[in-house]
Length: 248
Ligand SMILES: NC(=O)c1ccc[n+]([C@@H]2O[C@H](COP(=O)([O-])OP(=O)(O)OC[C@H]3O[C@@H](n4cnc5c(N)ncnc54)[C@H](O)[C@@H]3O)[C@@H](O)[C@H]2O)c1
Image (cartoon, rainbow, N blue to C red; front, side, top):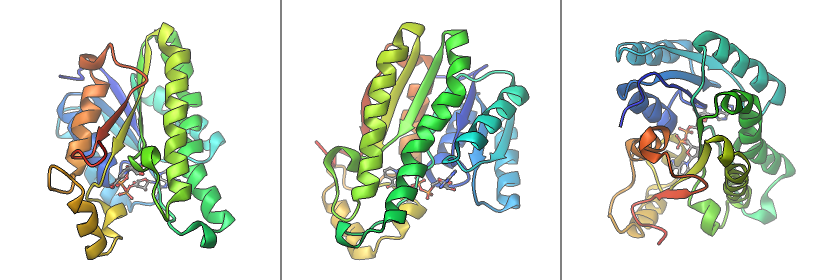
């Protein structure tokens, strides 16, 4: 699998799963446009240098993906800078966990806006390009929690279930133009998002993983490479779980 000649846009790639995807796809020869929100400038420059050293074009763009107007503008900048766009990976996401009884309206709104509205924003801003070239792969990062629900994460689970419904719908709308849309649903992956959970809670999650280990960002990146590459040319509208068998 290789991505020579393709340009890939990844949201929220300054750390964690997004960063691992950026590195993996650059190793496969893809040019990488990525967005970040709150990383410090030297981390962004280091990531750009790492990717450039792999022999590809790259640039980071500051963007709050929940903002429709800014997203449209940044995607235009990216198109001008790179001259094309072949793969869109919606990775940016947040949690604001609480039991529903204690969940505030603000925690509901911010999670739905950052996790779900952002996917609408990014696809709307990119789809004309995909339509014109009659080619494109959209990869949306959801979660197994969007399939089975999770106590304390009603907002997050709703946003991730929404991503699945959105992706299946656009796969139906855009398939005739050779634009594919798929979901990766990670299970429990080591990152800043899961580092927040207590040790005992992490152990409970691990006990439910048949492959008997917590996932790594690289595990998700391997799946993203497959969906970005021509090796998955006949796959659309699917949800691929990268969860060590947790949800079977
Ligand atoms: N870690 C896991 O176990 C796990 C499991 C299932 C799904 N996921 C999903 O994977 C994706 C990546 O998560 P991660 O584990 O790497 O977490 P992370 O917290 O390390 O990374 C999240 C990224 O999203 C960015 N981001 C947050 N709000 C943003 C905004 N408004 N605009 C732009 N960027 C924003 C952050 O800056 C960061 O780069 C998320 O969508 C998450 O929901 C993670």
